[in-house]
Image (cartoon, rainbow, N blue to C red; front, side, top):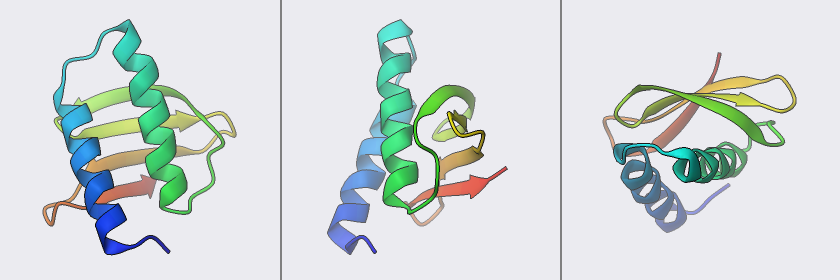
Length: 84
């Protein structure tokens, strides 16, 4: 289980990352950050191989192992990953 301060830091990092426009270098960074978020939340993934932006702070992440997750920041300001 992750601590509250670690979860808060993760949420703020994710929000800052997802708010920025993406370029090729940012795509790689986004994939790594989404991989970290999914792993910190204790979900199986391996590595994010692609991400599709749905809205601000809301992405669909496709993992190397075939799992897909909707990764977003909740109204409470927490990072959330929902299996798709």
